[in-house]
Picture 1 (cartoon, rainbow, N blue to C red):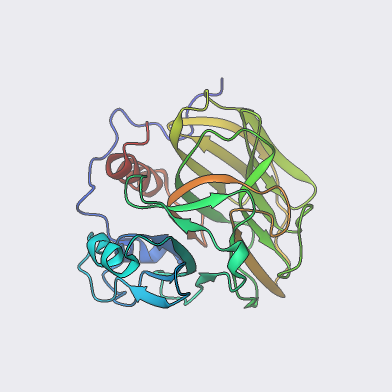
Picture 2: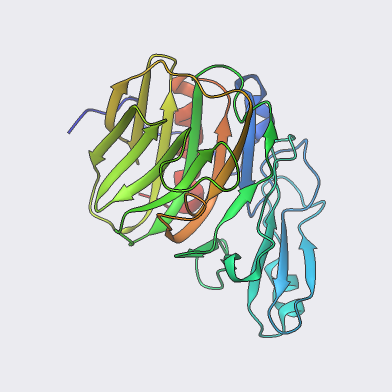
Length: 284
């Protein structure tokens, strides 16, 4: 087992102090959560569709930093129906919302998982609109954090970067997935990390990092694998998929929080976010 890439004697416990604004210098480009995580963002958190009559409604506008969407308001509106996710709003300030207009491909909002997380059930997934100029601008550097929960061990992707909405399978940019118990981070078609993670036991923290020279993948506090790479992305356009490689390698499980930075974060900053997500969601 490779030793942890981010070495600290104790993880920061800052669950009530996290603010994406504090990491503005790291260039956040995507940020999704059921709580408000950016003091500079006051818009909606999520748009839901009610199964009983297909009514759609936004929730979470104007809630205070650190607060979750009002689940009592959602329950009252649902009246026992199922909530499907139409749009998960981007809190990074870039307006890169994740959405799905096709009803049969909309994830559900869990009524059982902590934090009422979006649930992806082998098919439903969310995607951004085409981002002109590409998803990243600073060359290969990026830092990606996910708090998730799943015991699903089929070949499945929980995030991917693609060149257009129709790309599936062998994506052009990058993806994070599981293959059995392997935790993976693939970069374009020429380089990938694939390390054997711990036994699947529900919640976990996943970190995908490109420092400009290497790609690195962590699970919880352990670096799983690393590989040399200097390849940049196509700068033309890009699409972010959550819950599948658009049309294939579909994932099953919950995603609590998902944050991407257009930079190689310092160990101090990435560890702070890791510690905060672990504290908030009791990941490991």
